[in-house]
Length: 418
Length: 91
Picture 1 (spheres, rainbow over the protein chains, first blue to last red):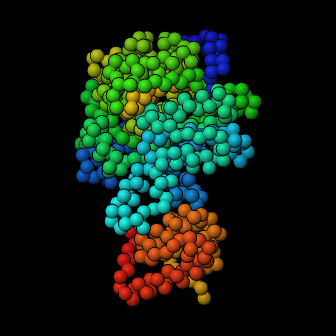
Picture 2 (picture 1 turned 30 degrees about the vertical axis):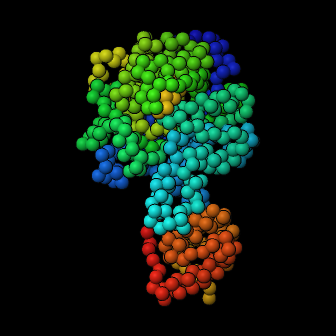
């Protein structure tokens, strides 16, 4: 514990919002409990994908073990691309977890912020092939509404009868975290009483996986997929692409108190910045990312030494993990324990920031930091206290979750134990 | 007795998740909660699988399933007579 209770309360007065519900559908599990179990196992979920056979990278971290059409239910499932289904299932879980009922709330005061990086690209690819093969009559009239990245925000709003503001921030791999940051602004600015926020992505298609492979972003450890995602390891060679969704229900603290709700954690700060450096490579010194972290700390009223734990972006790419190590070791010389869920889940792109926000909430609640998969040895230059092999059981009062995206987008979320 | 073309039943229950017990000769697309985009998509699938062209707004939107069946049967029959129907079942 780093903060005296009264200091923490005073510092966050008027700036903290409560996390009252979480939901997720991930490669590590399609609900909160199986996700946490999967994360704590420290085992990668990467496996070969039939559809990718013969391509330079033929493995990924898919969502298995859930019948998404059945989970979505109803008659509208036909018009939803897979990323929308993932988002909708996660959103319903989160709202139920918060003890809220869309049939009874004032929907005009409910917002939806759902970050998506790419959207329904497989619908686009399928229809491009149909246009080429059979002409315009073969093109689905649903192509546009199914592929647009904001389809998830729109469908979730319909399902939840949420008539307040809805947005689909696209900050690539930081989108899910950006969504949470925007939700905080909507709540503190008074535009909403409840915001359902998170991220979703599903692009495990031959074209997109090959495109990431062609730019050299993916691990090429094809002989050993389960060992490929190894954040912070000396022999890491790229990320493993995953799919998934996570949603959080956020409310102002007084609103939660008034309705007798339960606060699972507090979002005490959310900082955003941009590298303004390169389309895909992070600025190597981490100063751009540091501005986001500093902003989150300032909002939370914390000094760097107050941070008990860091849920890193940790993608397993050489560049990200080197930059993030530089950043963490410079700003947090007290060496708070670090984890990186992408070792288990792969990199779920726009969903990652939201999935990791939920992981951070669970760490605060359960007093345990999950291990980083496949991390056997850190490079000597890395001076981080990375959690490996087993979950580390310790009380965690304050935690940061980092997310960085192509385009130079940086987001840091500060969470505090409720 | 009015019947429903099996492809109509298959598409409505399989793709559009319409409960089988609602797929009746007298049902209309509207009564099955099929909006204009859904009906347009239905028309694309019928074209793709049976080779039957139709203006969905004119021919499917307000018709009963029995009427649509009759239209499809006639179209398939006349096309079959010309032996030009690309019948596939890839969807």
